Amino acid sequence: MSKYCSNCGVQMPDDAQACVNCGKFVVEVTENTPAWERRYCTQCGAKAEISANFCPKCGRSLEIPKKPAEDKKSVGWGILGFFIPLLGFLLAILWRKEFPLRAKSIFIGAIISFSIAVVGSIVGLVATLLGGGAEASGAITAAISSLPLL
Image (tube, rainbow, N blue to C red; front, side, top):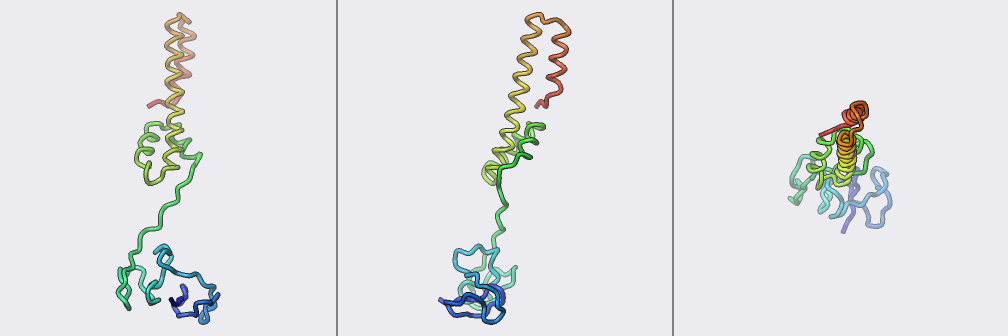
């Protein structure tokens, strides 16, 4: 199988480390090379337009999928989920397959916020029921109302 330069498309010897025409170091384009990194047909080495679906020389399919978006954990998404838990739950559901790490980050933030709100509500209710007085109940209610709620 012959090698072709990924920069200029010139056919090169199989043992070449750099292109004999343009001098660029060889990046071997194989069947497994992602399509967004190709500029030439892997079958014959012919130059193909980025919008082409088939090689103009040999007719091989040049399906060009989109480059996958990067998925990583993020404190920022967790903070967003904490301050806007409803949005956090919604995005976690929408992103669970496409961006699982982002979805987990925002879901954890939303769960923490929701848990704090529930615990604060229970503490306020208990304080009111135990007769902590209007002042204690008012202070607890004010603290709870400052938490982000659904």
